[in-house]
Length: 501
Image (cartoon, rainbow, N blue to C red):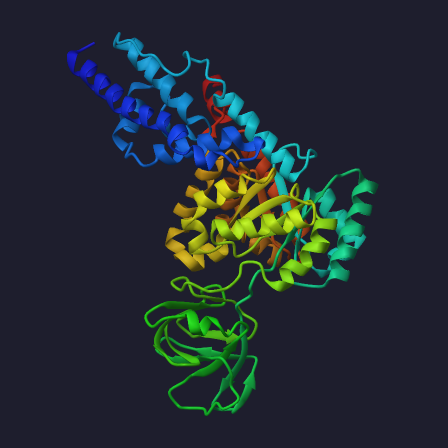
């Protein structure tokens, strides 16, 4: 081999040694973060910190050089960071005949590729239930979910986790859902876990007033360039020509938190505006983006303020009240609107009060602050015995911008895999199929990519059973080719047929 190649390999070793030494320092320098971690996640937390350290380096060139040499690269190192780096160093050092002494002997790391996969599987089954053969398939139950026949159809079609959204219905309906699900599950011998979502603070449009009618309406159309007024109360409201609409919202205090120049979005981002002026009890909002033919501003639609720090509790009084029912009937609680480690600690405290610290806990990553704080959220959650992460892609697209969604969902998957905890791929999976009976090509591709996660969530719709069957068919095909991020390299019929001819 030429001298230039030796030099290149020698340089890779030197760079990797710097990386490896920084990984070894993590355990000692961050012992305080590891102190309170639950025994189920001791390795997870250490590996997670090592991965976070690994990703502080720009590994672009090293990654390219390793690929060129045909040596296992760093791109699949999430679950076994130290083992991956040291094994590469052993191989390269042996090739250039330079001794390397790792923390463990080559191939002898206690947690390597296969063992780390077992850890992830164990953590997944503990959260979603031992009945999972492969992936979790979660379905949001509609109000008719209290019907045993309908629940039986969902179970037959492949649902193994039932989601109850506590933003809707009532304790009575939830109880009927759980009881009938258990009946159907026993009858069909198809186990199914119960996941219940805490509602969190719901910021929605409440009342809409327009000048033409001088009274409340359920909806009105707004266009780019229009100005609307978001107010605390409409008691003394006097309509003005300059406003396309005057709107109240369900949580008036957000008007106090918002600042001029910050963005505001309505109805899952269908209407985008900017706060032009802030008054004592109102926000003047300029509409920047809508459908070219105008978009309908409706009552009871979500409001997002991605640039605003909201002084809102992640756990509302209603959530705390509902926890009594959830702790008695659910296998998993979903934590909406979580933003920081203090929020996680609050839910852990409430679960402990009810002697349900063992209840599975899923953190829903649905706002900008939660995504930015995700490492802290995961480490705090690891003080509990059973945890997971949901990627709420719809809200994240609104909060961070749709152009960032692909990048963000990938980053969340990487961090979950490094923490060896299950990730739920949620929002609009086969949405057109569930609601209209026909899937778009883009949706099928999206569903195929979801095979890389531990659980996929489908939303309700009149064709949900058809959507479930389609999803199962897609996953059955894709899991033969894909295991997490890695291709399985099974033989291909198209290749075999070519050579047989």
